[in-house]
Length: 388
Image (cartoon, rainbow, N blue to C red; front, side, top):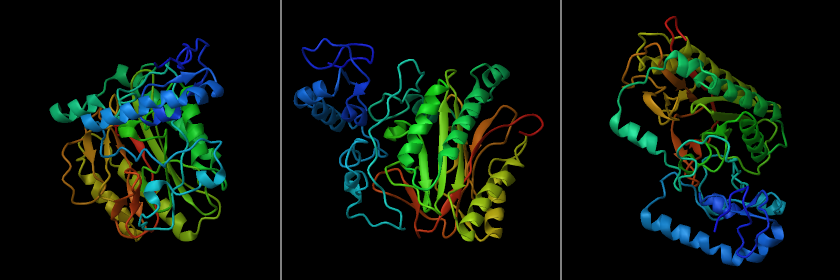
């Protein structure tokens, strides 16, 4: 049996009130949270309780409910009270993995809980993290949604979601310093979202295990926060998305220079910012979406950098990802013309070396193929009659 946070303990025969202690394995498998009255009761009854985990794995395997992005489930996470040697050890998938650069992953903490009173997107409790609304949208809709004043400016409208994202990113950025783990940044982002009555959109999106993406040095995007400490000289991208009580997502990211970053790294970060700024200057009714990539490519090339082609900007609002699709490279074939009321992200990923990317064995972390550094900035934009 599984108890709600406000119910009784999940251990058979125990009628004590459930505490905030939830089974981390259930959370990792995407099962409903299972709460216990305390650590002792959890330990005593774990042998019986873990049969649920075996059954869930069998059901997932039989039904094919494991998305290609689902991270490996074994040997990747451990509790915060685990020995430092385990926390910093390579995850199982990485032991014999061939990395393109010097960065190495560590274990990460169990999935963080979201209270029942927080509004959640449809994928939040899906076993494979799939958004059925997005799947239907991809299958049936080719039009770019036009948002009206009430949807944009309501008390918990789209602008509110974006403001909440801005606040959360600012808080997380201020916490960055050498010696802080990206897991700690994840905790800060998670709690800041909940304090603002928001759900952290990355959490369980196609089984992404954390509440923020933390991409360091050669990581292009979708880095998973873990127990590795941020080093002096790292460049760190924090990608935050908040889903508010009105049912809207607000998405943005920035790359931060931590401590003494070398001149080449600082130039890369500035180039990524300049690429975004140049694209934003083009946002107005009548602009072709495909033309943004030409401008971004020009700025990157002038600074001896390249543009990642695999990952694009996207429409956003009631859905995390929807039309339009916004490639950041030149000579792309993006469809559509900007109209007032369109809402989308621009998020160019800029590399010091070649534009190629590879994905780690965690099925999420995208890295440069030559191991050189990458930087990114992102905003959610609204097209207005006068620009954005």
